[in-house]
Amino acid sequence: MSTQRAQGPKPADGRGHGHDDAGGRLARQIRFIVEVDKLKEIFRQTVLINSRRAENDAEHSWHLCLLVITLAEHANRPQLDVLRVLKMVIIHDLVEIDAGDTFAYDTQAMAHQHEREAVAADRIFGLLPPDQQHDFRALWDEFEARQTPESKFAAAVDRFQPMLLNCRTEGAAWRRHGITRDRVLARNSYIAEGSAALWEFAEKMIAEAVAAGNLKE
Image (tube, rainbow, N blue to C red; front, side):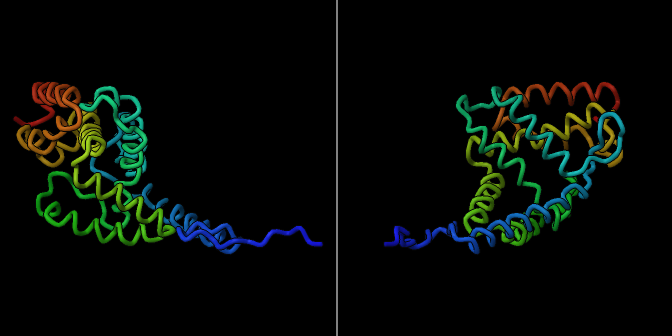
């Protein structure tokens, strides 16, 4: 008499346990991981503190994660979902694989930035299994909307990090593009929505950069 159990139906959420389903899911995840390796080749306007070469997007994303876990205590919301913030900062720039890095002070390019990046989000996150595609896109949309405490803090560190690099490289990107103090303040003031403490620190850095001649008044 056979003791083998009959197999029940596979889950309806796309996470079937059969060999073919599991293999197909893993194949899609690996395809996504290989595709986003391209992020390492997207270079930004900011430069590294020591070598002064251009920072790439993958380095930027890593640095943001480090800022989040180091500075989370300074978020305006005491009980922040740090893991959710980390997920947002690690995926939000993946769209630049297709859309490219848009310089923060290029007003013409900024006008259509979201539309370009939304198309990129559809393609890149679409490589994933449906449930992960939905989750990653929801995190990207949350970051873009900047309505939750987590997305506000994620956006705060995303703006704070380039300013920190600029201040520690004698205003390299600012001087190269002729950026002035008022534009830096206007571009980055919403850091205060995520962390009043970070914005206070940023204002001091900006004042010091102006005094040192690294940022035009």
